[in-house]
Each structure stands twice: as structure tokens, then as C-alpha cells.
View 1 (cartoon, rainbow, N blue to C red):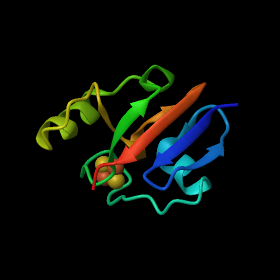
View 2 (cartoon, rainbow, N blue to C red):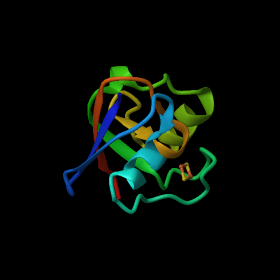
View 3 (cartoon, helix red, strand yellow):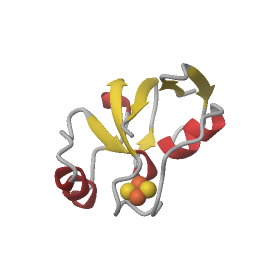
Length: 95
Ligand code: FES
């Protein structure tokens, strides 16, 4: 079962494969930053501290939004449009 840990709270949850990172964070008990819930506003940007390889690859839309916020897509993802596929992911909310 995939596992998500949110920093700095250091709260974790086991989640089902394919769960949105945003929903996974809420399951860990963290109030996740979000605005549009639609991969458009960038509010939900989070630093992926570990486990980028366990997430689905970014879409062109996500890459555009990350670019607008000057966030390196190799380190940051938008939690409202990224799914955890397997393994462990550790993230830190960027705002
Ligand atoms: S909440 Fe707007 S991009 Fe994720």
C-alpha cells in the first residue's frame, strides 16, 4: 500500500494506489493548501522530498503551472493533479 508523509507536520497515511496527493494528505490529518482543485492555480504546489518516482508523470498543464510559479518540476508537484502509484512519498507544502 502506498504511504504518504507530510512535512513539517510529519503525519503519515497509508492510501490506496492511485490516490490524489491532496486527498492522501488530508487522510494523514493535514489541512492541505488548495484553490482550484483543477491543476490551474498553483496553490497546492508541494516539494517532493522523497519518492518522485512513485508519482504519475506531470501533464503539460501541470508543467505550465509549475513554470508560472518558478517551481522546478523535478522537485515540485501540484498535489491536486498528482496521484501516488506505489511506495513511499514524502512531501513538504510550499506555502
Ligand atoms: S489547487 Fe489549484 S493547482 Fe492544485
